[in-house]
Length: 103
Image 1 (cartoon, rainbow, N blue to C red):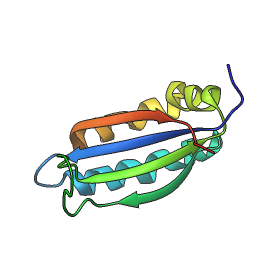
Image 2: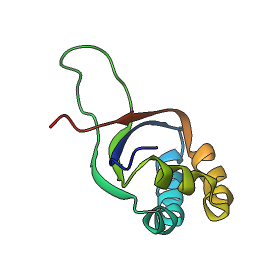
Image 3: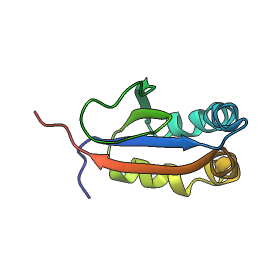
């Protein structure tokens, strides 16, 4: 397993009637666990208009992880597993795309 940092692109579609608020609750509960594994939320964006192509997501953000094993540790952590249902209740769909920097 590489010790190269990885970047996870998160693309989210919220449940109507309160999904965004439930997702904020999930973030508040899950970020202490993510930080324990070196997770760092970089920037969040709310899509406003498609210029080329189609994407109708509600929120897009990137998380930097020290390496793949750090991300795997976060996902397997019992504290994360306990709050994961908050995420599932908040969204209708999501994309999680592993990326690397193009330097």
